[in-house]
Image 1 (tube, rainbow, N blue to C red):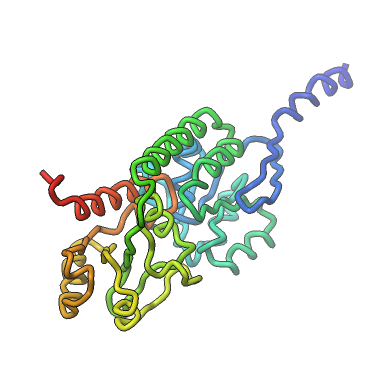
Image 2: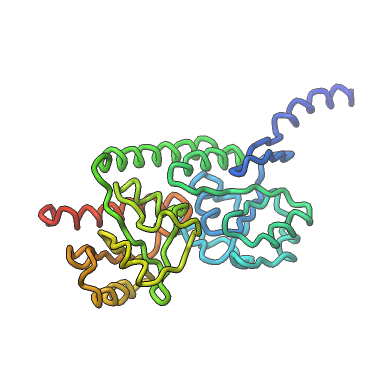
Length: 291
């Protein structure tokens, strides 16, 4: 009788196993769908919730505030360092990490401790749907993840259709003022500009967040200057550029201030940020269309 029960249970156990490939192409095998997930980055947390895995996230890090439900998840540190003792005590089924900006030593330590790691990483808006689908496969929430992925694909197609063609204007994306920091060609914000029918004036730089000097900006003379700034600071950043009235962006009154938010995130809200950026650029390009 015991052998009969084992024979009946073995197929069920096989069905419960989870085998997925993460965003880095690494194959992950878990004995069952995870119900205890730890996230080590705000963007990872947002992606997990969007994929329907929010109820299974038992711990995350500071600044994980999208969606609102994520604010209720206990914090175990920040993107630089997490409390390893607390992680061990939580006994997670899997830890989802962000290899592109996480602490490499911390990720290595989690591996040494024997935790299954799932690497979630997107470098372009078009990669978000696939990443959502893979997280849905990880958590067994494929239906929710598929719905979210299709929504993003539809919105991206609409942006591309609206802004396709023509010569793209150049844009300085300023993310800090003193010194001046911008974003390089591999940053998600650079990809957002492409969907807006524009081009990052520093898209040839390989760094994610390079520092540039005023002389470099003057030499490249962007059509637009967009200050992606903390609340209440964009106007001050833009006012600094008025010392250089010969810049094309100044002559054309193509200065835009935006509060950092979706544009600086690495989840679905990055698309909302891109849509907002496109609207701001459109309003400046076609002033007669403004209400």
